[in-house]
Image (tube, rainbow, N blue to C red):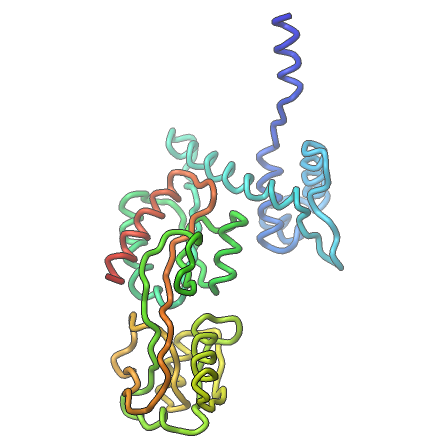
Amino acid sequence: MFELMILEFGTMATNFDMDALRTMVAGTELGSFARAAVQLGRSQSAVSMQIRKLEEQAGRPLFARSGRHLVPTEAGDALLAYARRIIALNDEAAVSIGATAAAASVRMGLPQDLFEDVMPDALDRFARVRPGVHVEVRAGRNQVLEAEVRAGRIDVAMAFFPAGSDGHGTLIASLPMVWLAPQAAQDVAAATPLPLILFDHPCLFRQGALKALDRAGHRWRLALTTPSLPGVWAALRLRHGVTVRTRHRVPPDIVEVDPSAGLPDLPRIELRLLTADRIHPAAADLREIVEACARRRLA
């Protein structure tokens, strides 16, 4: 009976192939298994065999064809999240016992507003705690960063949310939105309709500004839209209009619009820390460091 129980337990276990998991992750992140084959130094047929092997082990399809591309199925998305954690833990274990010179990787997402102070501060501290660990930093929109964290493609992220967004990570700071204009051209805020320099859609700052203006019956026009925060500052300096951000890291030649301009009050916005469901120890260290740096910088 005891021997039978061991045999039955053994037949239930599935050991996913580590190389195949690496191929799956690389193909998904590169958007092409052909590119993954080049990066991994394998033939396309070998890559296809590895994916088929994973599907056989999983007992269900992991990818479906969408046009000319393969996209993960629901089971594929679930396995991808685990694959990233398995690979990271494997690599970290190998480094810790000196089995390889390679280091684990951690992935962090941040809004552009934090790239000049929180990011370098956190990276400097993390390098002292985890020397040699590769850090991948991504800039992104709030919705994208949250989705990437939920999917396990980013370990730790900071993102903006509307005030009162309980249930979205850990609250770091509640910040007022403010109207901003070039110091040398405050009169641009008195123009009718009000020229706006904003991120393109979707953007919480953009939504907050337009809702406030529409509620107040204040006429406006989009003078310039861009996905780049440096692009916003450059357009302000060229006197193309006004924008909406927080007071954090505003350039010295950009100032808050004088209340005499009559622009409507803006809502507050929250900065929150998001963490993937299961992270390896190096990513946990990064999370603690990013939270400490952000709280200190935004105090």
